Length: 431
Image (cartoon, rainbow, N blue to C red; front, side, top):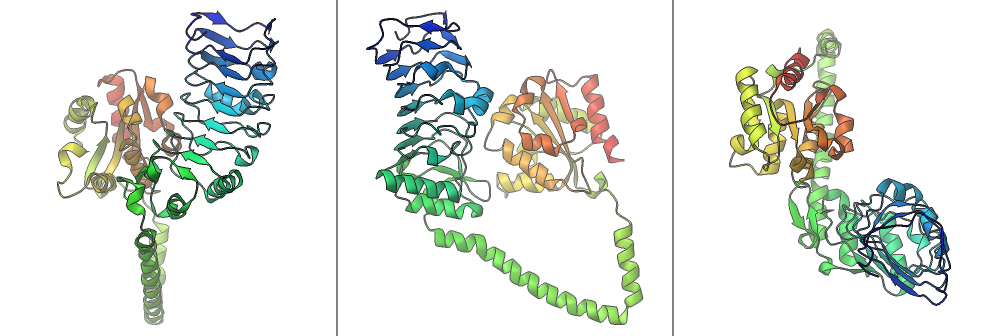
């Protein structure tokens, strides 16, 4: 029945007659919607393909009548991410014979606790094309799992507990295939154990174990470039131990100097430290080289680089830093962004849709701005975001920026309201 039905609601309880020998059903890419009714009479059904339908409205008991189901495909079916995150354990509660499940391409980001706890016969599971940051279920519930597809998600690393569970499944089932291609992994110093696991595990990995990753400098590279883990360990931890040695020597020298000074100038030192800890002051824009750093997407450069820049420089008399104009040729982009943000009094982020969907540099810019905030300059970040893009703002940015510093606009144009908000937040907050 693939592509056979253009419009049909499955909202009513239904008893199917004469389907005692029905084993295979394909209704993919049709017009079925509202999967909330209960079905009876399909106990022999083994394979159901509902991919391409609108399964956004799904009841937690819809699959209860399909207790003989072994293969279920629900790819590109608009599954509601909040519903699945809360009720996925109940959705698959009665499909205890399930062996193959495909819920790829649904923009899911979580599964509920206990998902697959009654699906111990599961052999193949495809979660590709979603937004999972890790394996979203407990691998102990799927002891027979042979193929796990996590490609094209947002996974950046796997914990030691997860890799051990994967190795256990691989040895128990005499083979496990894990697909990670399409994720941007982390190959920084904090992920040495994960990189070592990628190089040494007997789990079958796709793409010849070579994946795109971000190194500790925020540069995109690939995991095969870090096959020499001993050299990477020295690069990561050698600097740490050098700092430890330097700090130890420094503390020793400082201790000797302090003892000498306390003996010679005790009254002067007491007065000096009282002045330091008793007169804490907020930084002003005079403490910085540049007034405003403007973060934006290269795709939507006209508003931030022309109209916004002119308003800041001409009307508010503020100096600005624009990466395309002011970045020194001798610096790479990552270092240039960090140095520029550290030297600016305010960081103004123009959060257009293209900026928020740019995984390469937008998140790096936002995190660099968040790291640059300090008690001496707590209102450093100001955000301009279009009202249609509010849901795209990262939660970590929302938690780091004051509500009054998030300016919501309906159009990318300098009007009176926006100009007044910019003036008060870029000038008034500093006094």
